[in-house]
Length: 259
Image (cartoon, rainbow, N blue to C red):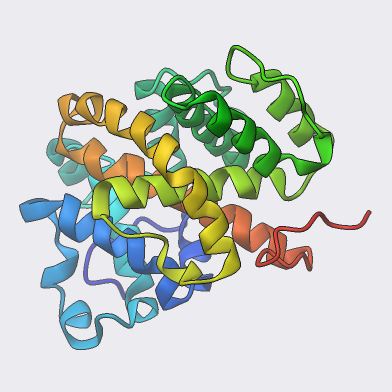
């Protein structure tokens, strides 16, 4: 039983975090404990004090903490001390970032729209060379040679709708890596010094500049969003990673699946 009151069931969050290893959860723990400051309960739980950094031992506490940050104090009290469901949190973040989405859409689709919104905000911070590298890095199979003047939303959506299982993971990896660099001054723990980690690091600079520009807006939104937005972006990446694994795709190589 979680020491922090956990809203169950929450099929969009709890099962995913329970599947994750320590390194995959490490950045989430950083967001809720470092960015959450005095509002964080996780670091005061017995299980955290006894087992940190064995984060998988308290995956439910991490989930409960994220839920808690998703609701205001009064509403959480009315819910018996529990926060809202994760889907409500994602929709809340999407609305705050002015992301167009359908509340009836899958959680993966709403998260994907948030990821693309963050990239779009970073586009103008990139040099032409970085823009070209970004397009080729995300979609090397397109062989794009003409640099679009505006963010290539249509190109990305076309690749995604075309059934590319890896494109969204590439996008999520870049955004999650950039947000970790910007907020925690570290990369994605589970990548370590891998080839994929080095690949994602190439883009963390220009994307990070765009995210840094948005961070003033995050601060204005209040302390909860300084936790929730990084968490949502990281969880979106974890979801894509585990979806690939279930399909038998080697996420570590970033190669396309054979269909």
